[in-house]
Length: 343
Image 1 (cartoon, rainbow, N blue to C red):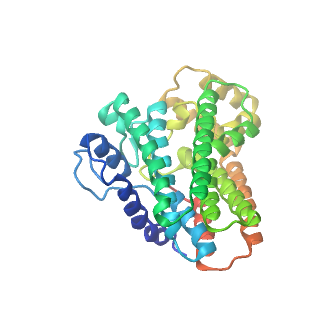
Image 2: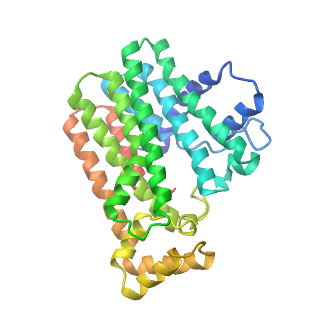
Image 3: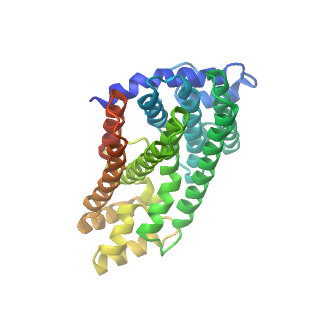
């Protein structure tokens, strides 16, 4: 099954729903224009464009989960829009915290308009996410269920913040373990993908068993997705990744391949890693040294193996669900893609 077709099939309906949230919000116009730039609807001159908008796979997973259980998309669309807006507001802030100058092959919001404006844009998009979720009332979702969905989404945002705190604190830490890393990514990355399946299932059924299996599917795919992201960030092809190759090494990110090398590399190579990660600011020349250590340690093969173990756990939950329809097949295809993608 062609994953690009699956994503494209849902992209326009997701963006239409997000645009409905923006309807009536047009002053001051540059504030909303900066949000639309980040979402890929406007270019750097704030003119309409068809630039790369991102994969929109989190809201797609939400929609497919809901449709797998209900046969339609209707009630999940506002929630899917909220999930995409949460993801994007967190990216705007993440780019500031990491000082990344490029996202999705174009300058980041802070790079173009400055850090103060970017913080405000991210804050505004956070509120827009809650407004999107409140549009569930127009899809005839009960007030009780809307409160439940808002609770899921806001607990998820706190888990994102927890994960981001841990990720940043690990940069200067010397005692980070693989278990600590997995806990961090289950929050920073896994939480929103888990919420995507949890929200979709919670809107479609009251069966706690089914909801739990979809939630666990999302959680495990989220962890596998981040591990694959770590691999791409180190070994991905230049130009395919959304941000510069090697930037995680320059920022001393404790990604899974690096943690594995700290643990399993030879004594001399571990000394090299400690020297580089002990610096205040590693250099571009240090990136090459780290890459050679990772290669000798077999860190790439190990990390991909861990990603595939979490993928296997996710598919175990899909099998237990015992639903057989096109939406379930598409969920499986997306999960497989996320763990083996090259961008």
